[in-house]
Image (tube, rainbow, N blue to C red; front, side, top):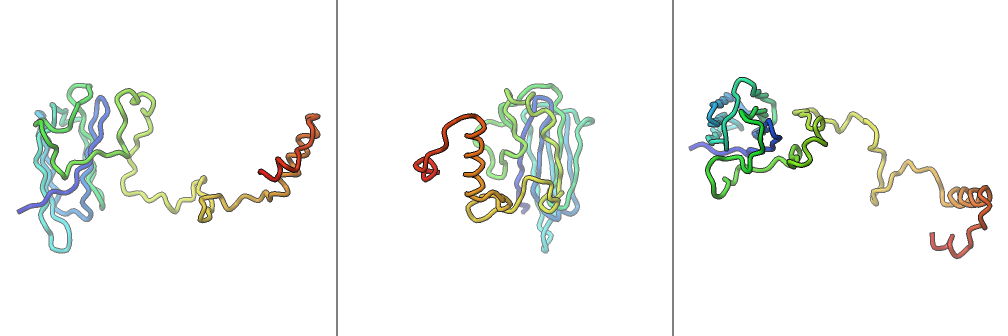
Length: 180
């Protein structure tokens, strides 16, 4: 008997994103039919356990324009919808969604927000960005405060006092400074 890997999905008006989470999948077989039949099978793990998904998608798809990518951690399928419209569910059958089908919140965009995020849904697959130090990370202490902040409390008070002098404003009282 085969098992079901987790299938995550998200959509845009014209495409469907399907991600199958199955690390180290071997013998991957994917089949997509124009009427929306989607089939996946593979083996994984030390015991080469069989995994399988056999579902009917909500509507018809364009098989020729759809693309699959098999990575070391997951299988990503970008499925082109035959008709550019939003689906109200992933599967053709109504009722309770199978437990292995989840919404891919990392790629999800609401119908009314699609135009705002048009280029923001790039898939980077297995790329690990954690060690690229692309800025914005900084060193954070236990309180979540950036540890690179070099302004001391005294420097901040001096700066506030000098701003008050430049603008002709009265100096900040000791009561206000004590509250800060």
